[in-house]
Length: 100
Image 1: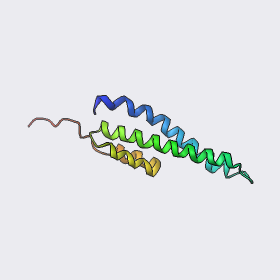
Image 2: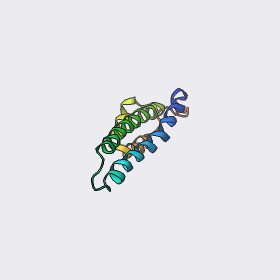
Image 3: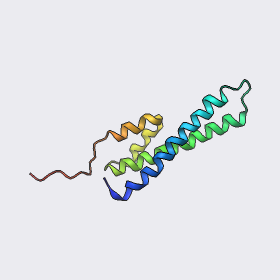
Image 4: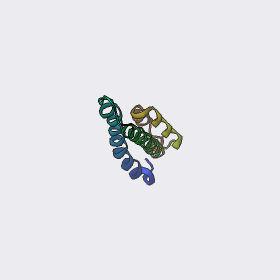
């Protein structure tokens, strides 16, 4: 793993997952259970979801860079939390191969 990026992606990881989960709860649980949902709550939920998705894309981009891949792999954040295991399962390209 590239040490320069190692600490950065983890800072985004925890906050991104909590933020996205909270946004989904706000949209689908709180707003959906109200008979006449307040439009401001629904808009706030969708804006929060948009922000958390951008955060997820950024942190997955950092994690891909840590593993030796291009930051474009961060776009897997568009598939929400399914992108996390997709990037996590990529083999680490920065590991040195043993000399033969």
